[in-house]
Amino acid sequence: IDIAAGDCSALSSEVASYCDR
Image 1 (cartoon, rainbow, N blue to C red):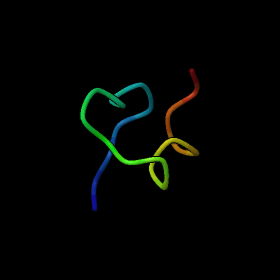
Image 2: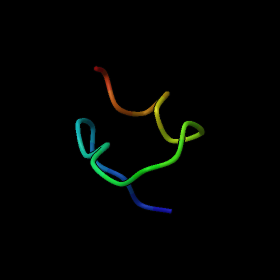
Image 3: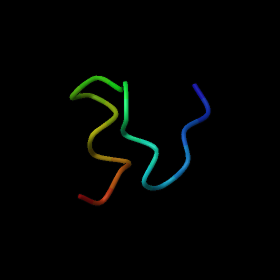
Image 4: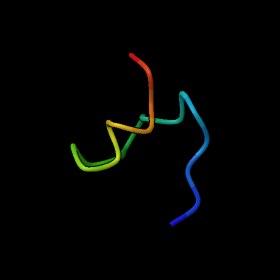
């Protein structure tokens, strides 16, 4: 999946590692 850094709007916790909250 292509996810941008900060695009954790409707993303799972597995993608949370990509987004820097």
